[in-house]
Image (cartoon, rainbow, N blue to C red; front, top):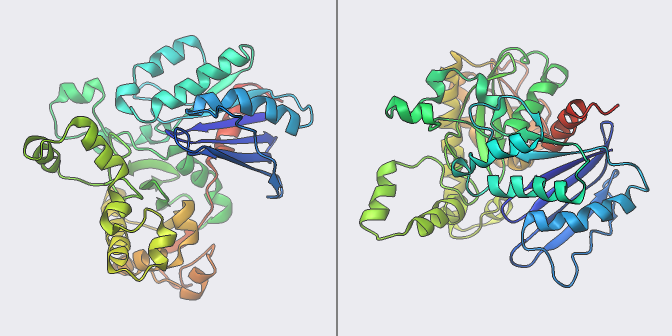
Length: 387
């Protein structure tokens, strides 16, 4: 049995797999405020979630002492052979997923300044699991690893070279999602699998990735998860001059600026209504419509940019929560990409695909569900030598 842990800043997602079959999955949200747990079985049926107790956990790592004993009971005595963890930042050196050692943890600790809101929680969960069961193999799966194949010209900012050498460069994220999509393209979209494909990971966090022969060539996310597309609460592309203006002329502290860019911008900031695309699409408020329009405009604009990086395009794949479920968003983006040769099949789009382009479309478009947890489980099994 393989366990998967995805520790965020205020939530923890988990799953347990037997071979490639997910037995249990769930999450704990609202950590630090009003935590709530939910869980489901292999057929999607609701399960009694972990009891968070009278003094509930306030951080993701504090969930593990409750979660792991609960899972042991729910799994009916099956032996937990290893734990796999999503680690946001692997830096330049860690181009492959790795078995956790004290040395690796020390190296990853030095990368905290590159991902201050995510990396500490990722590593704290690993350390807590080590304390609970020191003999249990653990594997770190890096969100940045998949993008290390991008050429140096795609990773560089126009800053002094010494900063690039120190690690100030475009890393790209959502790599586990893109890796999963790349792995299933031959089966689900064979005509474009080894061609030039832009994958649109559209969810609360959103980015695009240019694939050539299922290898990452470029991504819209850069040094941090703020870059690229506007997201639920993150700003996306932003002129650095805006940051300087807010610091110098608005008197904002670094902490206030961080809160603005990560938590009060994006769809929430644009609309003033909600960060949730479901609310925005259902709303008649013009600000909500405007926020969605900005998102679709920016998505199409970046698809054009990645098409240039690929020197052409054969297909687009929509994935993640919004990409898989929001037909109006896909339709708007596809409409803006007609100049590329994409002809949307509106009926297929309303059915959520999987193929949503017309038969004669020069650029094919698909909807493919992603599964980052499955990717983590596969790597964890392989690196733990679990039979």
